[in-house]
Structures are given as structure tokens and as C-alpha cells.
Length: 221
Image (cartoon, rainbow, N blue to C red):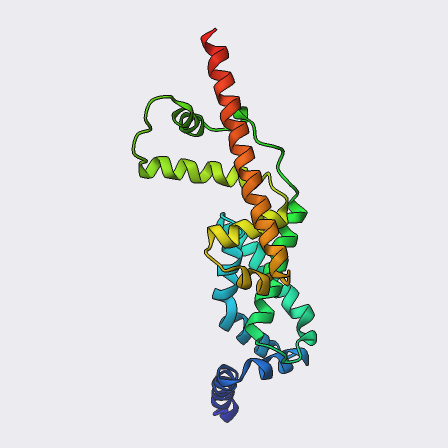
């Protein structure tokens, strides 16, 4: 038997989806606040790439980025009632995403301080070249990758807030103001944390270089 509703339902669904796609961020937030699942799905579709880019600034492994993105959208879902249209929705979302990632890093805890014994053979070789008295050879792509991995290990020894400030400014090229807007920290606080992180990174590298030099000396005895 012909059922007009069978044709009407997908048409209504397509029209509803088009309506959500054309809705403003504020309207979507209001609809999602009232329990509109389709409205929240449109928010996820619209801002999913943005959330993934933010999470990628904090985590290197794909599974960690995906886990962080899920946590971000869960947080947005539970806090969307607090968005009242003051300021851009994207800015509000970016702050939630940033602070969610920071909290995930804090929950993971700090790695123990790196030592020469924790390093890979490639990283030890890189340190040996840095401490060699002869003129250093031009850096290869492989050498830069090893240095990047070593830098990541050193970063993980920093307090989370300092690490975040350094990663966002030096690693992602964001301005102090952009980091301030994303984290909710004052600009002076961002500057202090970034400067402190750079100093601690230098100290950690110097400690590794000294440790490697002592290990080389002991091996020659």
C-alpha cells in the first residue's frame, strides 16, 4: 500500500538538516540547550575540525587526539547552557577545548625526569654529536626528527601549564594574546610561563649533555 509518510519523512529530515546547517551558532546553542540532538550534531560537524586542530597541539598520537576531542565535545554538551552569546561561539568553544586538553595532561601526570638511560640510541648519538669537540655536521632530516623527539621528552618533564604555553607559542606559532584568549590566562601570565619553560628546557638539555659527557668519560677509563 502506498504510504505518503514514507516519502514525507526523508524530505522532512533533509529540510531539517538544511535548516540546522543555515542556523547561526547562537541558535544552534539555544536548540542544543533545549535537548536538540540534531542541533548539537551540527555543532560537532561544524567545529569538529577546529577541535581536532586544538587537540593536535597538545597530543601527538592520533588515538590521544581523538580521545581528547571526545572529552571536549562532552564538556561542551554539559556546559552549553552557560553560553549566552557574549563573544563568539568559536572562541568559547576554543577555550573549553584548550582547558579540557590541559586538564587531560594534568590527569596523566608528569613523566619522571629524563635521564640518559631513558633515551634511544639515536637520541644518545645526537647528544654525542652535540658534545663532540669537532665541528658539527650539517643537520639531516633524520637528525632533526631525533631532536624533535628529544625535545618532546624534555617538554614532558615540565609543569603542564609551562609546557602548554611553550608549545602554543614556540611550537604552534600563536601570539601571547591568542594563547591568553584560548586559556583564559592573563597575557603577563602567559609570558612568564613561556619564559620559565624555555629556561627549564635549556637546563634539562644541559643536564642531559653533562650526563652524556660523564658517561663517555667513564667509558674511556
